[in-house]
Length: 319
Ligand SMILES: *[C@@H]1O[C@H](CO)[C@@H](O)[C@H](O)[C@H]1NC(C)=O
Ligand SMILES: *[C@@H]1O[C@H](CO)[C@@H](O)[C@H](O)[C@H]1NC(C)=O
Image (cartoon, rainbow, N blue to C red; front, side, top):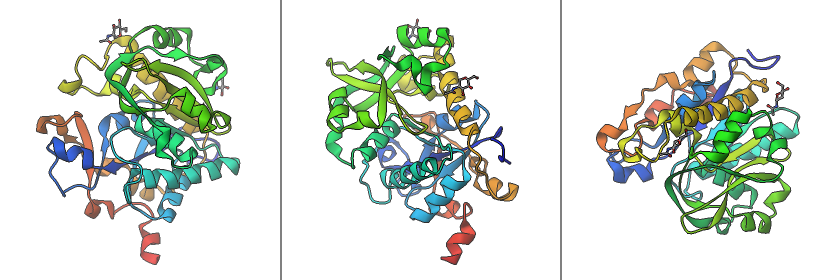
């Protein structure tokens, strides 16, 4: 296992409610939550394995998850942060516990992508929805505008000149968001005291928004764009927006390697191989969602029945 740093890290990926997929031909009422398969492939491509994290559980469940995995990814998607027993609530528990772990001297990394990047700032801004601005940056690949100091950041200091060149000059970061956080709001909510903004971009109306950041104290990283899609999202509706060039795929690989390397510094582990097996995403098969008309090629869908097999089931029965 991981006593001296983990060469085989396990990343938890937070699932999310299926509301936004019900208008896109996902059968209603059958599934409670889902994870886009592109995020699973993203972390797997860098040598990690994945445990899906359920929504709607109690605080103790999320504590177990944070104690047993080596890092957590908050994926993108579409939901409201205040949905009862939803993604925002689960993310709030996880965030709080990840902060505790790091305060206790453990290196517990978080990566927020798109909605997940917004979630971490929202939580840090005392859950004030006014933090987010309306943004018109949908289905467009952009180069990053790095801001001063990015070379000294954790996220970019070890990036090769090639990667920095690609990121700063080519259309390789896929934006697909209706909300964003502007540098003005970032300052207004004092987020600059906890986070460093590393790059910005401009939406179709000229609004400048934060496109990447990292926490100053903790190994928490946020990307407004979707690094996972360049290598792993081929749904026809996004053809022409997602960039699949060699350079764009190198960008996917850069961020995947970075995050999984961060997780290798964490020493958590499941208590047995059996417990690991019961929790891994291998217990589930992805759905070929774009065949149904979905906006992602493959997704993992979950329902309550299936979810019962996994994590700290003993514990739940004891409660
Ligand atoms: C950058 O690379 C050096 C040398 O491999 C390593 O010691 C350091 O931890 C890396 N920094 C980050 C933030 O990954
Ligand atoms: C994709 O990236 C390449 C660089 O690798 C760039 O030349 C091209 O314009 C980009 N295409 C799109 C559709 O963004």
